[in-house]
Image 1 (tube, one colour):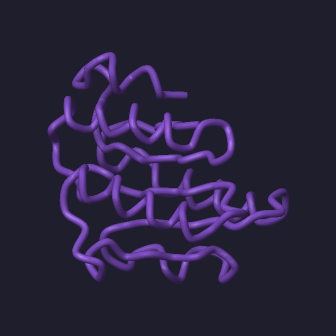
Image 2 (cartoon, helix red, strand yellow):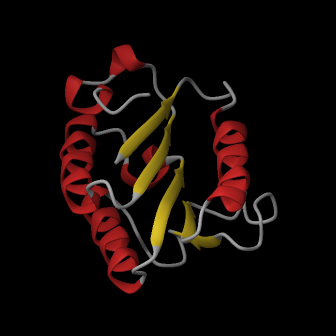
Image 3 (cartoon, helix red, strand yellow):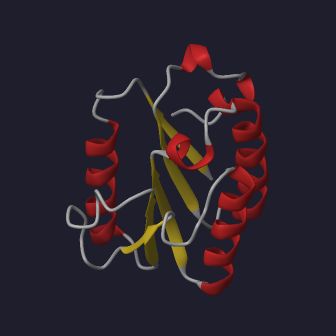
Length: 135
């Protein structure tokens, strides 16, 4: 399942996703992963959440990101939730490519794993292939 938290920069998306991650620790039996570009969240999330920096793994672009997440899923059978902060910093602002990646990721994860993204853009800027995952 894919969920997007959208809004302009500075509207509190990162705070929302941090709260979601820390609350998920209490209600989740499986593993949780946090993915971001850089290390801003590293000290703000519970130590039980696996943290990944896309810069360290040289992840750049939506195709590379999809492969990265596929590898994480392949290596973690009990993965329940993946939280991604600032996906446009990782993949760029090509919303068509982002929508295609979301569709592929939705097919890959099904209902077994929830992937939550923060997206620094208004819904009006994005195509229907992306906005269908908002909520």
